[in-house]
Length: 429
Image (cartoon, rainbow, N blue to C red; front, side, top):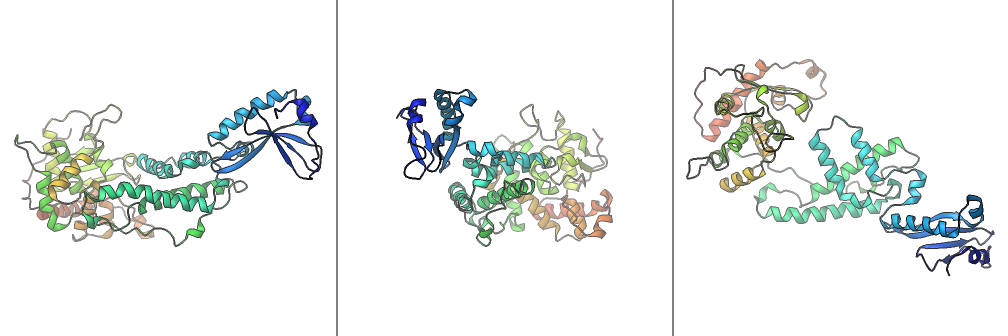
């Protein structure tokens, strides 16, 4: 029937069956009147599926129409708006209870961690994008079954993309099923957000519901990330390969950037954003602000002979601007994406290389050079741990100079590179 005030008034309430009865409107699908089976109550309701679940919401009661100054047409218009929002996946019932959605909790979680590095923040957002269909849903609605389905779905989706890349890469780098690591990361980040929400609103947010998945996580082994000692000469040749015009195949800027990663073990972003003001050629020290490091600790790295030779030669090129490795764009101004260069190096060398594998190479070589474990951690700006004694030890730049030099010299030897000529020094910029 078309729901009008007169038509609703004629509907039997309580219904003779003794049960609630729904009468639907002919004009607006999903809009109806619910008559009680035990009282004279008649309520205008909307009903439709939201994210795969049936939702019914009371818009107004028939008895209160006159009191709130509304007609049936007013209620129908309000119902139409609610049905449109429900079609978009929004649950108005949850909004009325003040429940926050997954997307709102994600934003609050990230806002509560101002010290997260920009790249880590992006990683968290990318991981949670696997659950984008749930962003408009309150956490209270998500079940263990939902989480398990999404977990398997992430692995399947990421696995398709990884399988294509795997064909072009060295097979021994892959020790897990494609997509397994991505699925684990997505669920791990979701768990962190969920526990953050539960700690702040235990009345509306239930405890993390996927504890029953203990033991079901995908096994993810460590990849062989470093360049092996016997492969370093091939790597060196690939990085320094020149074209017919006598120029470096990957370009001078990228060649210098890749070698700086190799000889310092610096992280990709720390090296790419290095400023000339942080390079003290006279003192032979690279200084990186705590704001530019992943660990949020300042880095004072003594230059080994290969690093000094590299940066001094680059300074003599007359590179303009504040960055050692300038890049396009005014927003950042420094090198951003070295993927193309590393792909060319990998093709020329015959094995896969990336920025992190060069950091692992530095650490692998450094393990065979005599130095204390704390000195090794300091060279790559790793945390010294919770050891009380380590907290009192202050490793100076000069303390680290010999270990840095020994590692640099050893890497050069493994690459088959002659020791660089001694420089008298260079004037600081």
